[in-house]
Image 1 (cartoon, rainbow, N blue to C red):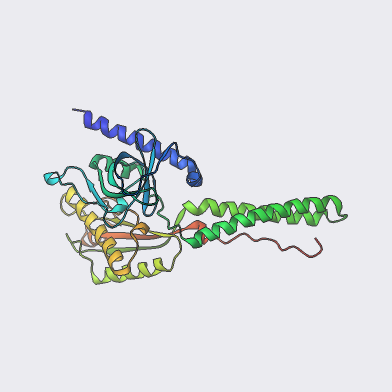
Image 2 (image 1 turned 90 degrees about the vertical axis):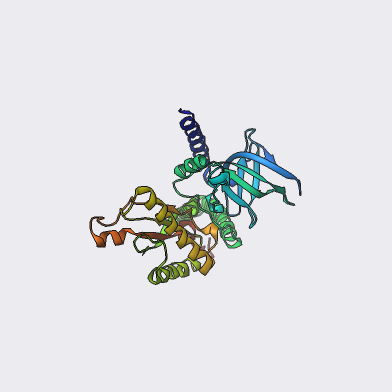
Length: 339
């Protein structure tokens, strides 16, 4: 039968289409009006089916078949599970596994803000695999803190002020004798400042690695060794001192055993690294990109030797920092008193 393949292909097509539209919207996605939006009455019980079109730290937006958007909020009581599985109880998933393009069902109640507070989130394993395949990297789960908003406001104010200075300089150039050259140089500097400001705004969705580390494991084990814990302590310290960061975790295994066993083992290793960072250093889950176990793929050494296999039994941790917050601000030229 080919119905499951057709269903998975349809889900993949829908997810790719949604992510393509989201990427085209870019930074303006927060300012674009939705086709329709739903306000949930406080205390109202509601069940919604649809596709995730936007993901933030503690909320996500679901669009149903009628193109109506619903803001869903997650809290400590929200249950995230797949459908079916052993005794049809499903598998538990972390809230970070709710990805853009994922088809799901939500049951919950409305809050005072008109949002749907999720009590149950359910989805099919096949839809989850499709969404994870489409999502090249979990959309940057950035904490929109008040400090970041203030910096953005300051950048916009600088752009407006620079625009006003350019108008003034143009008027001075038309009336002042012998000052045309100086006015042009100042105007060029102002344009460069505006361009630099726009580049910083555009870079708010781009991340670059600040620190990379790898921790190794014993044969057939996912237990963290003392040396591994020390490396994770260093990564956590760097992360807490960084601005606009996320942590990417990838698990791997050597070729000992079956391919499926090594895939599961690599996932357990990645999960244990996440658990250590969260429980021992209070790293927020919204700062962690969905961990993934790659199994035997992407070896860094030869699996035919004992030493090579030891290097391949690893988890790689990358500390990624938002480029828009680390770039220097524009150099705004000072105006002389004679202008």
